[in-house]
Image 1 (tube, rainbow, N blue to C red):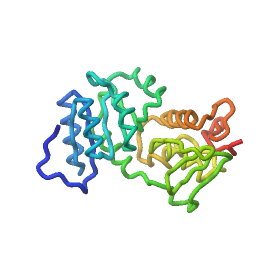
Image 2 (cartoon, one colour):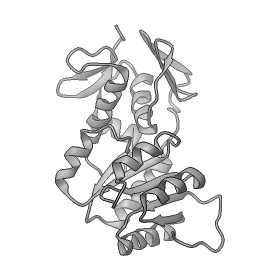
Image 3 (cartoon, rainbow, N blue to C red):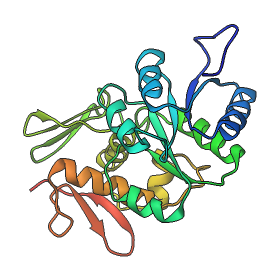
Image 4 (tube, rainbow, N blue to C red):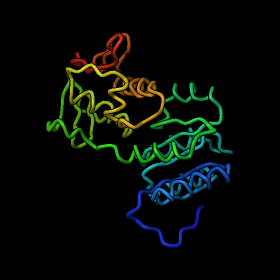
Length: 238
């Protein structure tokens, strides 16, 4: 764990979880120079405990940890925290595996990566608006689905649906402009911000996770429809 002489509760907090100590220290140094308070650990159980009591805004989480791996850590953290999670992997082919799993991560990066790009993604996440300022409606309904934009809650047939921050933000962007067909780039700009530089197909991953949690089928969707050649839009819910 990285020592801190005088922790500042006002600084945005980032937890770096990676057993490659030199890389973890390098990432931490870049984050600290950019104004973040950082804790570092290479142990999965320690990471879970830190996430529980230190309340980071973002966790940078390596997939290939010894013992308990990043996927399991992510799943456990999601039971008590909605912080942003950036998953790191050392192999390109693992990205496809990760993207096919609803592990609750918000973004993915493949090693080797630029520490400056990682810092930029962390900062972009923490700048994301928590609601759509262009629409003053508190909620939007689509058949049995209700999206409470201000309260950041989703109900399906009056039962709450647990979503990650990013899943909610994607659904909220669609729900507050239900007549608009969003391209991937437009959803990226609405949710991740115009300066985000990752793979736009990450949108498809979060759409897939949303459909799974809402019981929606891509072949006959009620809530999130695919607009061929463009992207996605909300459906009527019936």
